[in-house]
Image (tube, rainbow, N blue to C red; front, side, top):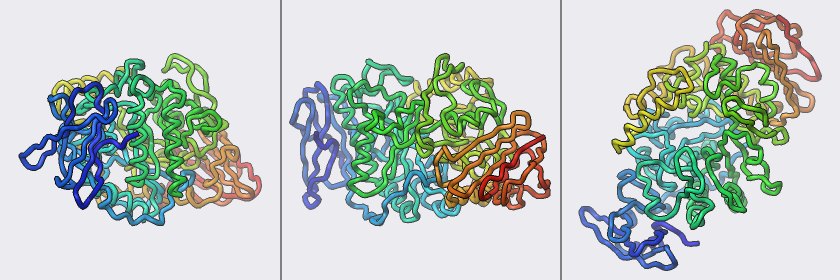
Length: 606
């Protein structure tokens, strides 16, 4: 099919082609803006519903819109940059201007990564791509192997989580320019950091979404939480599918991203013979082969559906990995005691024995969902499950954006971290988690439409009807954004530096030790003592064994047999545990990891 949008075809002549899908329109033209002057150029219907034209001599950074049937002018659905926001003129981007320096980069294997999830606007003081780039040395010191950027496409107003995007290709001008984003990815690769981009293909934002004016990009055939579904299987769905697959190619090829995280794929409705997720998987694999670089697709889903991560040749959808919320929910409820909303299905310490090898819900009845939930994922390898103890959803979708550091005492923050990195899954941390950030991560928007402003404020309060949370902050209040900014390193409390040390050393152990690098769930055993709430996890690889003990209870527990040489102890002074260690005793919240050869049992008693 055609190359859509605005594309440079001859730099010397400043020749630019324009092409747009405009269903059932009588007349389509492109309007080019230079200063206060607008020039309208008619477009020709080259095939049914697809209009095109070529212009010369008007520059390679021109601003433009499409006019439909002599009515209003609208941004390009394929716009690469919206310097004036979602309602403004689109800007042509010369992607050849940036000179990449990552020619030797071959990517990183997903199996070896510790990932940090980042919101660009709140990660640094400036809230820009450049601000993220300036903190890369900090990330290298911490030891993460990849960053995952929350969506960076254009959204309304000055700030947003990113999930209200309306342009699949347009870099958010609040964060910087297309060149700034390329430079960030380039610098990451030079520092051996992979970069994952969060993309949204299940819905479009409510403000500045002009797609319905261009054609049937949505269908009433399916319903989603946002209304009509994105059209992947109804009349003219080939244009929607093309747009999404073009977007996948665009971010992986033009911007050199190493992987994509697909938002809430359970809301992508597609009854086609070949599911759009299967096509996305194929596109990524073809690019990886062509470039000889690692490329991967990670899916978010709340359905615990193992078909998502089953290979294409086995009838699956071919995702490389998926988020597993059950892991978070099990640990969070055990540590906090919360049982409201979707947490009503969790809270038993014993559940950890299952969730380290499988989804917790594998087909049994869920009280929250009111029906059976999940499938058996035990056959899928550990590397296909991405787990976290905090992420933007689980923090930001709390009424007041509470981080774990404000919900549990300091020792249990370290226990949670130990449980995360001792799993045979892919670990991800949320920005600020590594030092116990106490600033909230609130839900924030900056809609310009008064109707949407009121709706989001009312809707946010209604969302928490199943919880006892009160005093829900207004997403439209600018303070919701500014309060969510991370604390600068030079303003950390002493305890926060200690927690950073613990995370740094755990990550180093995770990424260097042969036992923890091996993501084989079969080489893992979990034992839980319900009374003491002590969790013992044993992992092994050939003749080496690691044993981790995690006291999630409130009392001291005697260790009957020390299972080897101690290599991590969360009560060490460098981790903030001055004068708290007792020989042969596991203190409340304490984490100890031992290394041994052979089989040294190590039992627990009260």
